[in-house]
Length: 258
View 1 (cartoon, one colour):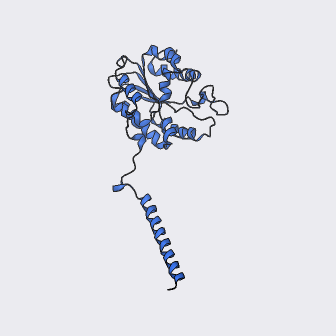
View 2 (cartoon, rainbow, N blue to C red):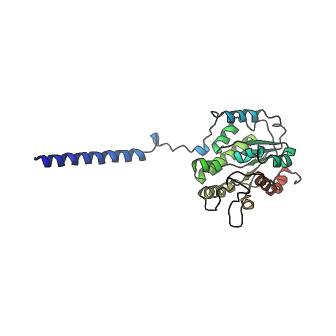
View 3 (cartoon, helix red, strand yellow):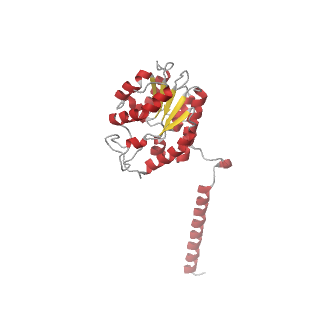
């Protein structure tokens, strides 16, 4: 074999080896988990955030809240619910403090975190007439979960509440709009999740309420004078939320609208 032919043969062997190696990598990347197990869906797998000091502290504080046993109303959610302690403080004082409400909103929480909290005592020893639940925007914003996974997480939250609070009615709110235009990919994801979450209502114990149109302008845009960061309500946004929800809330509580 001449030197030229030998070199050509060597390079051909190198190329064949490289192609074979790439094929092995490609096959390895498509191999299902060992034993054929389905991938873990995080939205339905309870998980904590105890490594975050403030989160652990808030959980412990909620477990020891003095109004737990007497609370008529419980709010369960993420930063939008926790925000009643900030930008929505005046609204809380007007509408919910007189009803001895308990705020179980934690900034950044996703469905799996609420599942963990419910599994670790957050509503134990309470007997509210009504629980208001809004969850899922962080599943979209942090991880872009599929709408089906977000709805599955919400379904498990409702199952936990049914088991722990069998006499309590639950008002599930549509995930609030986010992003300015109606075409915002995260808003679209939330809207698709809302369509599935709405089907979880039985209108006997679990009720679904979509307040989103009241927060949008005529073109479907989310105004910054309601949500300056296009995600979290300000004082005006919390007022709009409370006013829009009040007729349904009062009816479910057997209360007088404020």
